[in-house]
Length: 363
Image (cartoon, rainbow, N blue to C red):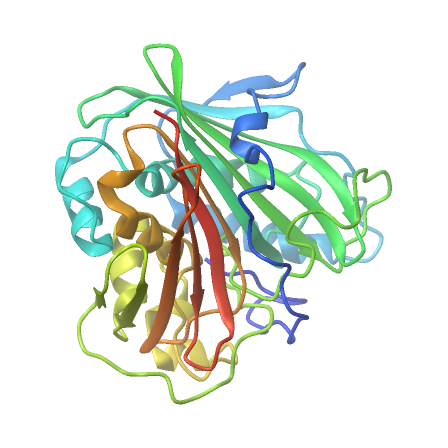
């Protein structure tokens, strides 16, 4: 999904250039430094994984209510985690995801698929009445995820999500939205999504004003009726038919040729059917010349290009920059590092950065 700006359905204004992508020297990803919900967090068990459509409606209503003059808004994150126990993966769902992203057919769940499973539970935390930030306007600036042990089709999954580290930023307020997937009581996957509430300054926020992702101008993965900060208005991208094809190998430049239907296809497997991604017509209603690709689709494509080389356990990071207009082309360069990890950067034909990140085997 992509975040709205000041009001539902209003595209964000052009932002500054994004901060550089993750470097191999940046230290452990946040998915490694996070070790479960903060002390004192109360866990609420949900009966099932909530639907994103209903959550978006609640989020939009909450964002509108937050703008009512005189309304008191919380300034701290809810000390609550949401959990859904015994989640089972539908084999057809996994196969559809693997086919779309170019993942190898396997009963091991890719990290990007784990993100898809956990995202509705995380969103449920962000639409709580005591969540202090409006869902519309949240910009997804970075993501880190770790596969700590393989998660397999057929496993019963316990999915837990919470928020933490509310901190001041010179352009608003940042926080981390965290999720874990446990199998038989052992955490197998953890993801940390860093968001910026642009233009929202809360009293009592703590932390660095120059945190990673300090200059977001790219895609956002939260709000259901939202746009993208710094939308790229360029033309001349290479059109193609079909969901998306790639050429090249890791260690070289890989050309992604993304069809106009990429947003609809990823929306079908992720549940994120934001109108910005669905068609040129619906995207134009929000100020975009064409539909744009989901940010997490592009990140998951980069992960899939690395493929089995990443091993069975691995860390995966991404920072988002300019959105990808559809149809379009992204040139992704992969670099093998001395420690056996890969870094990647995806750019437009004009050289504008779309995303940058890393994949690091840990086995």
